[in-house]
Image 1: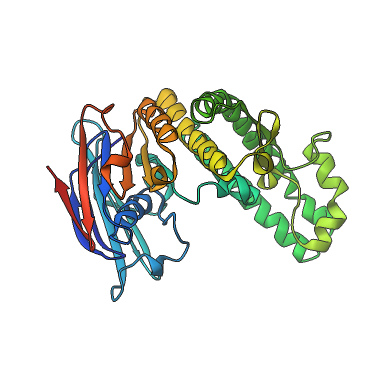
Image 2 (image 1 turned 30 degrees about the vertical axis):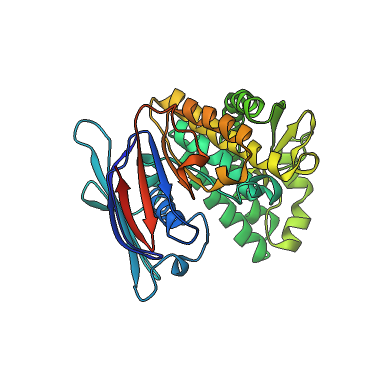
Length: 357
């Protein structure tokens, strides 16, 4: 998958822009505050329905406007396909192939995106929610049944939690346990299989970037020594007191070690950022191998924080992904782009974007 044409309106300080990006490497050059990151935000919003910089859409919509609009023609079959998203302060509209669709997940199927930015290390340092999202992205894109399984599990979980909060009898609460258990088992199996597929690739990329051995193991969301039936029974009274279910794949995590030590605590911030780069790029690599399709990878200003040696290592790994890349830089010299036979450069200044020939 690749973006052939991109149009955006009212995204931060960009009033309107039209681009025809390269299928391989796109360098977005400009001073800080010029609007480089806003361009990446627009692409991220098109693929995932949200910004990677904020959860508040009002901050992304240009001041004085009521909505932003991002559309693109994607390489899809012989003719391609048009996709678009309009996001306002109180509404979201998604269109694919000229038809309005109801779910943002349908956009993600057409435009799989991986993003690396200066706060990417939070994948390691923040709570397990981000790591679950990271894992679910991969399973969603390689296992077609996963989204429905995840949705059914979330429905059963909401119903069980509602029954707990309403202080219903144990019998009535347990009516939801069978559905919860069935979908929990499917989710766990699919996550574990995907992580087994992903881990050696992450290790390969981490060795290339940091020179360290990495391992990832799945923490299922309840005591490893018991099954979920036993965990739900043992914690029923506590769940009832607290009004929510504390055992299940919605509590899962990934334990990440580097040289057999916890990555969150035993490596530097710079090494953490490179490890997350390896994790993100490994997902793009596995996605391409397993589906025959390519990701779009957004890299926001991260190369500027790396020394020349690590920038070159990152460049070599980026080439391996064979993805369509959009990389923001304050100056083109920060990235050696000679490894790409074809590339484009765009200059951003005061929200205006022009291609450099």
